[in-house]
View 1 (cartoon, helix red, strand yellow):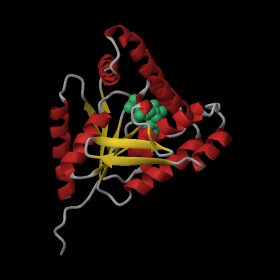
View 2: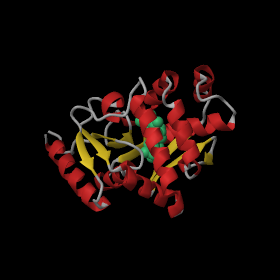
View 3: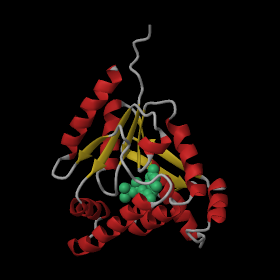
View 4: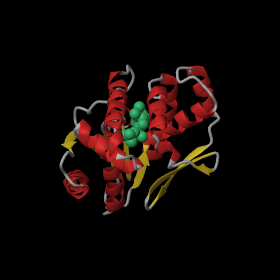
Length: 226
Ligand code: CDP
């Protein structure tokens, strides 16, 4: 009988700036798993669509764009790096404008079916922590562990501002942006942002990244034994 530990699929979903990627990255490192940031795929499509002057609603053009898109997600010890036509676009992807584009193109079935297929290929062998909006509900409904990570809107705005190095004065605008994006993500017909029925919800407002990681690691250890 093999004694190798089971390599799980861990799904982490939640709204913008809730701390998903910080948690997912640290969790993957602690477990020796691969971290996949599914949002980066939607951001790459948004970035490429914007650069080519496509309309965010043109499903046919976006489908053709994705089918010809040369992009790669490369897991590295410090996190995931993203390459578009061989160029490292990791930092460029994090701008609010690209986030806005990502959320617009993410509402289209032609975009989602293509990206979900890639996400399933990356995770199906297990040993993966994937974060996004629909990982526990659509991409891997059979995931071994599901977490839904939230935080207050004000806290999420503060974290996002820190991440992109924005000044205090822009906090209000950043909060309005992420609230608008969350509304769009939650209200879309296809794969809306919501917690899976069997997800553990974690409110990270007022918790440190270490505290959240500890809580999640304990749950994952329980599941790995099951
Ligand atoms: O990092 P943040 O939470 O701000 O965003 P992200 O995870 O990079 O996702 C950017 C956008 O992509 C989201 O606002 C969603 O519209 C979309 N997305 C999605 O629809 N499904 C996913 N699994 C991941 C992202």
